[in-house]
Length: 235
Image 1 (cartoon, rainbow, N blue to C red):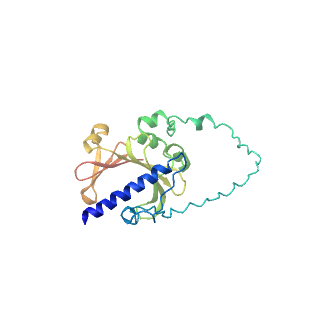
Image 2 (cartoon, helix red, strand yellow):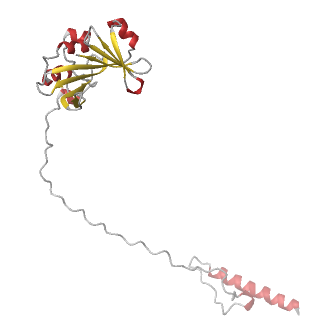
């Protein structure tokens, strides 16, 4: 039974080969009719591979750029011209310090401002003192023994720095200078004795102070309890 099927297969294959050879006459080969082929030579199975075309990505849309606005050329503006800065502004350099001009003082005043002012008693008025000593730092009324105001006392800084302060007492009626008070920086009663001597009269003053009045000179000295000079009165 098997041998019969094998012989039929061989016979069918031989017939097909003969048909192919007979058709090879230089012309386009003609595919054999599938109906004339035995079932064993027919390829009725579906094809294993197929071409499937998938849809691709959408093409990007072209974006039309707006046309640039046409700008008409305007008039050219000229820069404002400035004059070059002065030399002192363009290169100021180091700052210049201007010191106050020191007034020219008399030699006697430079030597001892208190004694100089004492010599002006009865001569100076207020404006005369202001011309040399400058603007007073303060002023107060002067009183007599009965505590009645009878003049004006002006306080000044000593331009020579010889004394800490100068005070000038002007008479209320005549307006003339009548007394000078000087306040030393550092002076004792012993220093006064070496300068003017010891011919004095002494009197007790409040707060343990002492008041010395020279008998042969127009000088009064007020000292504290330690012997330090507080002020010297010249008249």
